Image (cartoon, rainbow, N blue to C red; front, side, top):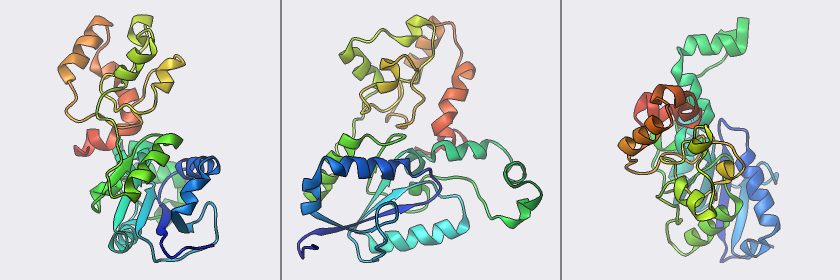
Length: 251
């Protein structure tokens, strides 16, 4: 039953797979105590309720159409706190790969002979259109990080998102560096907080949590030189989640 003292929370999606919202649903199943503090008033993945009175708005997905801009601005006007949920909302995500090509070509590749029927624009993170108060990175987000972020927001604090690289978490786990195994990895410049899950299981980091503040690019180049790789050889990995940063200079 809705409580008068509960913080009203809403979830909205733009261009995305909605996997981060599914992670939220999964997280809430084992953290039901949060539902004693918040009232979810808009969450298409989990409820038919569509209230427009909310204090905190979680946004999944990148902005890819003119009508998206109008909608996100309306949400921003209503929300006291707006949170970018996941890589698409935070960095533009995989959607921003289309920014590497002429939009007319992209539209034709996707829609064929009906390309002119559909509106599209360059994919952008939410912060490129409206002010974002906090981010929860990742593709998908980490469920425990989401819970910690909500608890921080409820007491008026900014979510404690790490500002150091994935390499730190790899070292803490005692992982062998993937560069020493002949593989490539974006761990030296990618924001930690995932528990280095991909490198731990033998897959190089693809940067889904975005680039750390003030990355040490010279150190990254030294690592690549030692591994016999060039920056160009790992750009396909870098642009998977960070094409917007590459094409527009975004964060």
